[in-house]
View (cartoon, rainbow, N blue to C red):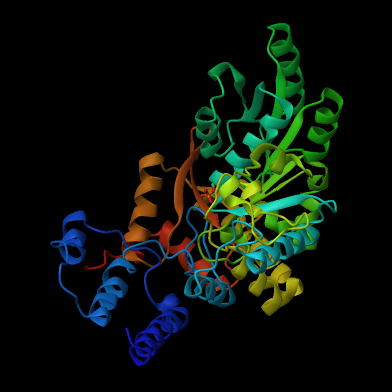
Length: 455
Ligand SMILES: *Cc1c(COP(=O)(O)O)cnc(C)c1O
């Protein structure tokens, strides 16, 4: 392509994205697709001859990018929203445009430094001890598996404890890492859906009696279901006493430690051996980026890889090769967007945006408590509140959520907590208004207010 053409097409992309930022609240929060229709619009035979890139980009924008959940929509309350910031988008674009690589020091000292700096800014903002090492991966699933693989290389094989509220990707990850079923010990959560410390203590004793080797406690800081935080200070004490590794999955909730209210709820985070969080959830980053923090030295002890052909021709003086902190070698620079986000907004504004998400769930809780068509099930915790439709069964909850999604006005999750059917709002988008919450609750209580969209 000649430069004039590149500019014309590139500027078109920028306009589409800024239009999306300006107008996303007017469109649907989610659009499901019909497999045949989508294949019709996006498929066809293998393109042998050149085509018009603008026309193809129009198809992508109008078909592919409309049929999905819009995690950045102010009324997308389902799963975990992704309210990504424009600074994050800009950082992503720059890295892609320059094909930035963050594998070795010699091959990418600039991006490597950006990653070391951004990760250390994040460490400081979270209140983790100096020297804690971090690295960026694709998301929480990979961050958890990477941290646990490193922990096991350090501590040796043994039993990992978790709860029925632990994210399901962790059980899958443990199996993939080769943990035997008897070494994956899931405990029933307590009435607040937290990991019960006394049951954990008994389980450790019992496992030892059976000749097993207790090794890892996998706690959650902000469960995806309810935002519950496992008792981190008690777990840290227990792990120190018993010589166990404390891994904390904060993929959803840990970013809340940037603000004062979250820091209170997440007390104890500074005592963990490894921690995972997802900047593509509550740190306003576009997909994908997950982050793990581990005690110094443990990552590179597990993952160091220095074959002859990777040795840098330009001598390095002990600088960090990012490849030695993860299982990836060639890796894009996910840090550029995070670094640019910190530099653009500053942590004070980012913390305020996170705190707003905590408040919005509390506002929703109040609206729910004041309305006898609803029953509050779990209180607002780290931006998540769950509630039931009075007198309705599971099917009715699912229907209410499905109608709302079909209407497009908003998206909420219908799920169950220990067999109780609930609706769940996750309110981490700081652009959500109180009117958005009211409108969503009204439509859930009164199905007549929703209508099926014509597609
Ligand atoms: C989202 C989430 C994960 C998985 O993270 P991905 O980025 O989707 O891979 C793991 N744990 C918790 C608590 C989560 O909320």
